[in-house]
Image 1: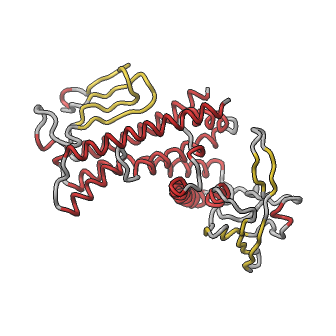
Image 2 (image 1 turned 180 degrees about the vertical axis):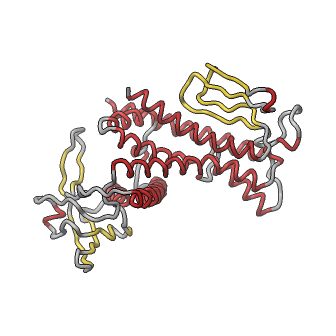
Image 3 (image 1 turned 45 degrees about the vertical axis):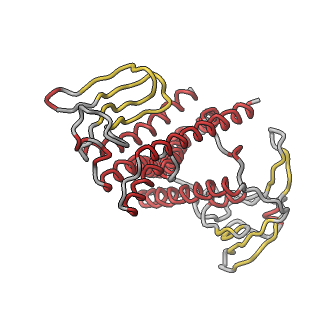
Length: 350
């Protein structure tokens, strides 16, 4: 069941991403060879009726590990049978930008809709970094911080949501003392120096325990669902930016990342908590897919958009061979990183 859920989630995210590229490519008059869900050998394919004058092959492929929208001339004119004005490379910079950014945009839109539906159906907990749970006998309550107080800063990081607070608490930090700035229930601002308890988790690793959490109050209603979707979306995007930055600065290690094997474990644990958690995870992964693709790195949509911006600034066409080499090297580096992360995931299973 876990594998089926994972395949369905990844299939949905990739389908929506490629659908964005596909729709904007079609609207721009780009020749699309194939719109496929999955990779590897074809299981099923079809073309629309001749009167539709649609040359695209629509296919379902064997391996549920991706998908693609094959467009003519993504880098250069590469097919003598296609008219010049149907190559993507010959479209205006704005059209190329819209085609490339559409995948990211569709993933973000899907995430917003899922977050809205999650809140509308089940409600949502408090998003602001207000402490709703502070059991006695732990550093937070022992320091004098109370339920209803709000964390506004931690170790120099401005805090406004639980997502951001969670990320900062998990960053590498060599000091024993954590510096909290708290807005009390009466509006007063107080500073606290807190030393977390050290405990051993079920995996035998030493962890830091503070003793704080989100409250049980659930917020409901249509207006709240819209607010939640917007707030949660922005919060997740912000924390993803923090995570990428922390990976480069060394405050988070690559062991914090998960590949396909790690995702399988996460989906398995999430499924135990029901459909609400699965919907949230799907929204989170959709934002993740969109965010990563927007990064101006080779082989990502953001990397290709970067070349459009370079051409717009320099008023010169980038050499096709240089751009192709740039993306090839980036793809190889990504595959090496994926293999390394997958190896770490397998290692953690044992």
